Image (cartoon, rainbow, N blue to C red; front, side, top):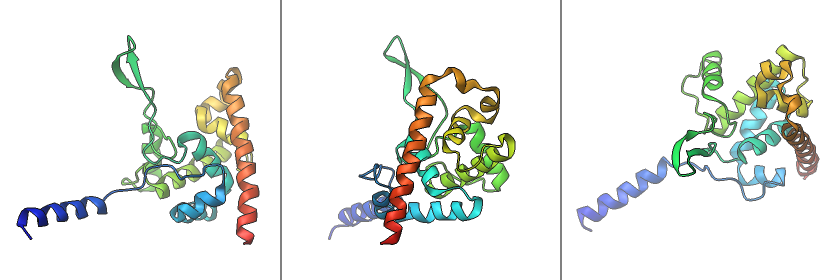
Amino acid sequence: MSSFFRALVLLALLGSCGSREYSAPRDLDNACNILSERPEYRRAFKKVEKKYGVPMPAMMAIIYQESKFIGNNRPPHQYALGVIPVGRQSSAMGYSQALDGTWEEYQQASGNRRAKREDIDAASDFMGWYMVATVRETGVPLYDVRNQYLAYHDGRGGYMRGTWRDKSWLIRIAGEVEARALLYDTQLRSCRKR
């Protein structure tokens, strides 16, 4: 075997070792199928449930809404004159779609400066941390998925100021997140019994 061919094989192997699964699971409408396809999600969500008390269905519904479970998801580019890219709509990124500043606040508070938004463990821990802070600062219970999502989307300060009240589209989406959390909860109860 030529040394060129060996080098090529070695390069392919090394490249595959560092790759991650950023694509969405196949069946996003079934929580049991999501967790069956991606067991690392179940481990991450269980860890956050135990650490923060955040219900798995609520976390999953918010991740669905924010990123559709795409680990490296980012907002679309904006274009000047319809063709010249001028940057993204926001700095949101990853499973949780956390903004740069909020993610940095989480990294500092958690002591994990290496946490990445593209990592399901870090993204779900961020969500637990954020939702518990929402309870503390706004009084919105962890199980109130609709209002937790409104505070997640508009920030806790925005939620307290009521910035969401004039956004009928956001109120509709918060209702959809709540309905998906209920759907996921029902599904998870059935597959846990199997």
